[in-house]
Amino acid sequence: MNPLNFFWLFLKASLFSTGGLGNLPFLHQDLIGLGWARESDFVTALAVGNVSPGPTGLWSISLGYLTFGWPGAILALMALSLPPLLALFVASFYNRVEKQPGVQNFTRGLSLGVAGLTLTVAIGLAGSTITDWRGVVIGLAALGLALSKRLPVILILILSAVAGILIYGL
Amino acid sequence: MEPELQKKTASPPGIWEIFTTWLLLGIQSFGGGSSTFLLIHQACVGRGWLGEEEFVRTWALAQISPGINLVKLTVLVGHRLRGWPGLVAGVTGLLLPSAALTVLMTAGFSVIRSQPLVQAAMKGVLPATIGLSLAMGVTTAQPVLARAQKEGRSRLGLHLAILVGAALLMAVPGVSPLVVLLLAGAAALLLLAVIPVRAVPPVERAPDEPA
Image (cartoon, rainbow over all chains, first blue to last red):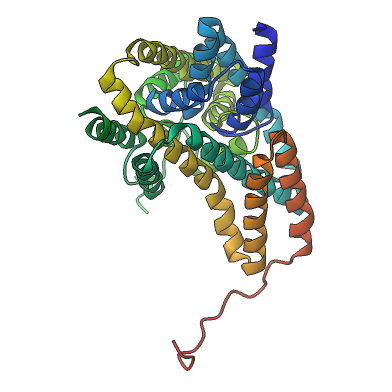
């Protein structure tokens, strides 16, 4: 594994996307394609990112660690720290052009595109993760609870862990 | 309005205060972004560092640039408060401890993952993670779709078509996510200019219509 190439793949994924999971489709395509990560690494990293403190977007640091150890985690941290600096330029640029309807329409299209990508990749990961109907029920229940915004994410995950132990562990 | 409630903007905090504020934010917010967001809001607006309107605008700007939204929010707020030193203090405080904890939790998990009970728990957690990721996708689209709904049925249909189109295109092997995003943006740019916003809001039909 080439560290420079590894760093570039993580940097590119954050640079060309927005939001905590926007880099997921990029990393999934590149790292799986190169054979540097397995599907299970992605699902585990997403789970840790949801549980650990800080933004969910730190999931890619977990992925860096799973695929390339401590150097991978540090490279992933650097790769996700740099692109946000562009927000300063975007902010000053956007202040000048935001009144143009074309700009607003393009931005809307980007948001819809990000949502579409996230759905496809999440459904793709489900194929390797969910093995029976009980998994489907847990996944849908988590989706519903998250959308209702009644429970904090950490509680949803704790409930799902308890469900897993009750269903598969006893 | 009580005059005491109209807090005027306080003097900006020092570098150290920015660092410690974001440090505490970073390690308090277990379980994803929305709790972190609320804590940043409390810190900024609650202490009078930024007005509510400025905070909302900063949040909107953060969402259209590349990277993690909460990091971009921290970049913009830190820079606004104390320039580049403020920016570095905020981002370091937010990321360093939480990144270290993320790695430690990953490492800890790698050690215990072969335990049968842990494996059973993970068989529950992993499908839930998929559900949470789907929810994140839906949440990204929600504000845009809500606005589209007010603009008429054809505009809403077009928005949904772009979303579904992006999802389907991504399912084609070998298609780059960047291409999908650019096509989604271009489609919105061209088609939303053609389909007009409905000028008149929907009028409720009189009750003479059969229910």
